[in-house]
Length: 363
Length: 180
View (cartoon, each protein chain N blue to C red):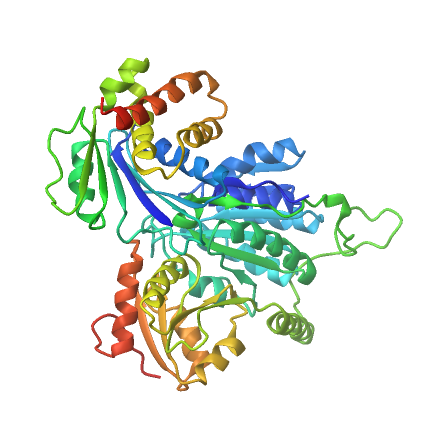
């Protein structure tokens, strides 16, 4: 049965959704602005007989994730930007070893220690792979509490389906904001499909091994091609996005997560005046919704990228759209939260071409 | 219908709880709601604020460009947030701590001697719930009973304060009706 409508903060929503999705293991190390997530799981996992460990470091926690995943558990870790940087080696190993796991990054201002304010400056790190080696991982970007719940479920599902880590990205605003949420049906981990590759004791069967060391070049060559085939399947099947008022729009804002919520407010303000503007919102940052965006770009519209970073999302838009449409960019780094009125101003500026807010991107 | 309310004061005045109670009451009423607390490296004695948006339609942005209503619990909050209120908006002033009035002529002021009224019902500390009662009494965004229901939901586990909080919400609403 789906839950009743509950008012919860975003970080708690992720924790509750993880438990309902069958996650029974969490390993992490504290960092603001995501501490409410491990705080919630520290008691909630105990209620369902799960395991919660506040590890001695981020590196330790991601390695605990590797172990639990190899043993077959649905497992999660979370952190915020600097902590996610520390986990990158482990994320690369998860990919190399084809281990499912869910990694939550409540992004904060950077680089370095930065601050704890909302930011989207880890877009490159998340979508290009902050760790070493040729790998990809699905990156999900919810824009509200209901979607935090649904995409947490999806993250576990994708991770198991493809035997690959999946990253969920939000920020302090997404984690602190409260909205009513209805959770999907809970999943009993015992009802999940059995995994025929896990290390759960080999009594009565041949032993298995999970590793990412392939010293022979032809063998690693084949392993990389095998991984690439998987990434190609994910890219073909798992793209998700939202069109909002894009029908007949002359300017379409491209934004995700927190930025997209603010942009949606701006679009509503302008639509009330009858102005033809819309919003295109990538929900999967990787795989990036290329086809849908490219189709829209063919209609000769202007594309106005808006992100809480200084030119990361816009690169995927450029790679996708090329010279088909005029592309504009406006980014806000370091944590100040723009209001819908400010984004409205940007859209007006793009519409009129007066260059007041944002800038035209040369392709 | 869409109403955005910013609550502001100093840490310890129950500013976030006011928003939390309003948000729960609105959710139980079946409205869409977002509750957005200011989130920084807060410290004791520092400032606190949150913005609650109620709507019968989907709420696009939880961030308000211009709140319709400001509830100012101390003077620095009035000074800081008065300029952000939408023209024609409403400012609730905690008259127990704020001597001045808003300087703008395009907003309306509702002065509530919240600490004194809270003391009448049992404790100074319920001043936040008095202000909330005045807010719903004046605007009708929730019925008083709906605000009380929201308070009960938002303060689960602290039932011993229920009677005091209920009395404070009702006192604030009565102050609006009766003018005293």
